Image 1: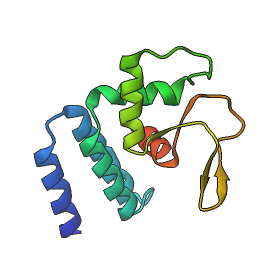
Image 2 (image 1 turned 180 degrees about the vertical axis):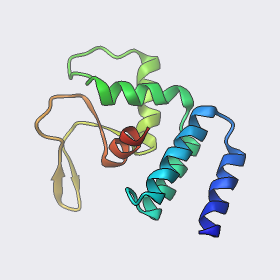
Image 3 (image 1 turned 60 degrees about the vertical axis):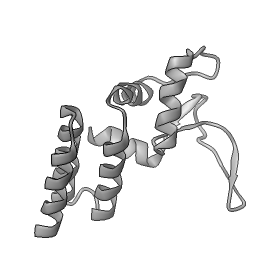
Length: 125
């Protein structure tokens, strides 16, 4: 427990943005309550540390309101979405192969969807 709390204190000390500090508190609380594992907590804190605070609103936007396949996306917005993709929070809803399996997010024609990690991050915020 002391080692875990030490990690949280170090992360808080490095965190400059209030929103990221709030997220860290939420993630740690979820871990203490048993809602997420230590490994998931570490993964979420690493993403939280690397995410641009301005991109959090875009993540919420994708989580709250889908982007249809036909919707025009500005270059600035696409840049934010690509940063979220690089963190593993968002993916473009296309067919792709992974270890011989076709991955898709069926049941939606949304252009971008939250990944499982993105859903966890979004739901805990």
